[in-house]
Length: 287
Picture 1 (cartoon, one colour):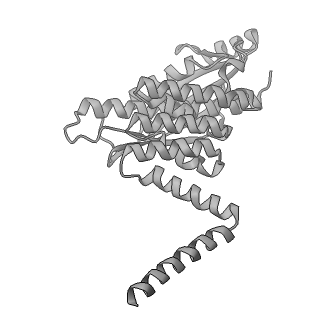
Picture 2: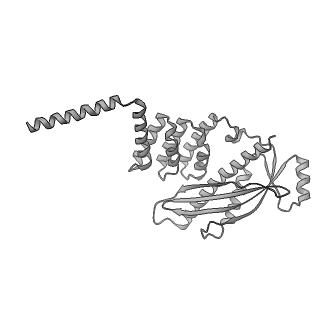
């Protein structure tokens, strides 16, 4: 009799669960599934679980998964990064273009970088904002830019941070369409003459490395740039951007590999910062 009662209660519980699931609205069940998959993506015990979660989230095409998929772009395992990039391309949320651009600049794996680039092509094609697509920006010279002093308030201890930041900013600005770098020895009068003759708008950029430190297996970085008129030196804006990149979890990681990761992080953040600055400058000074 006791065995029969136990069997009865097991069947009753199963029926109750099935009824509860049947009566639960579809939207609630869908949200629960999404939450479960997002949890697996962020906290899965191994990379296979995270890859499967990202793949399924991409097929579901829910924007609720976008923040978790974006964070997965900094995962150490390249297959997780690849799956997250594919999913973001499938979902089609153009707001993550800056994060994909940052990931593309910082990722070391060529396979992952290629997939992030593919996702960027998809989202840029969907974006109504032409400045998210570099090929859509007119390359006709419009801005004369002087790169001024760069500082380091990060307290990281590296002596060459300011010089490295200046090099990174210079490298990035030379890639920006329509920008002409100003010679160091130009006087204010020469700048004014050049601006008038070539119909350019002049700006001065200075800045500082605000944060650069390692937490667990990630490098965190924050960079600020100041934009001034040229000549005149009137301050226009002081934007900052922060970001992070994953580094090898090995305790034997060399100082050189860490420094390389720091530079990747600085370049990724600077890329996003310079892009946003020139987006605003183009809006302030349309052709």
